[in-house]
Image 1: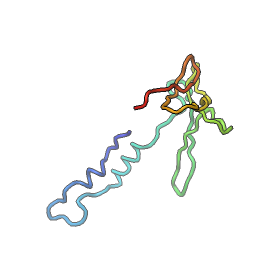
Image 2: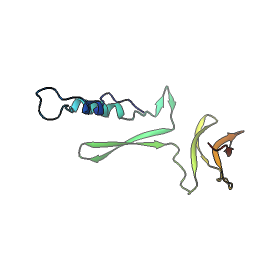
Image 3: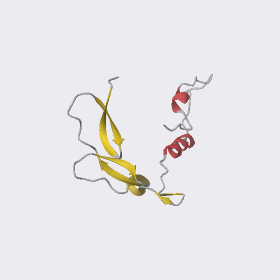
Image 4: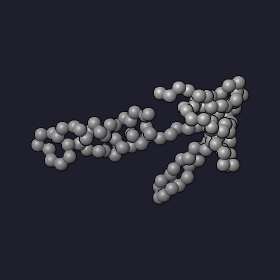
Length: 124
């Protein structure tokens, strides 16, 4: 989780200054912008000359407002099956999840010799 530069909870718990009226703290535009900048996703599609498995697209969502979306490349399959985005043989690919185990219990998704499988674990 990102540590934001301005902690508004801490500001709200600040005691009022003697003789002051109104709220004991103020919210400034600079504080808000500092937090917005800290929380902004910084995604670049090329790192150290290597293409990354995603790209970003910026679209207008209102007057003077833009929204960025993260697009995975290749896009996920749309055949109704469940997939996981993983790194195989030097490239990112979508791999189909194995069928859920028929038996009861706790399972983790694992890989054995490069094949995804559900591995039984002990109940906690």
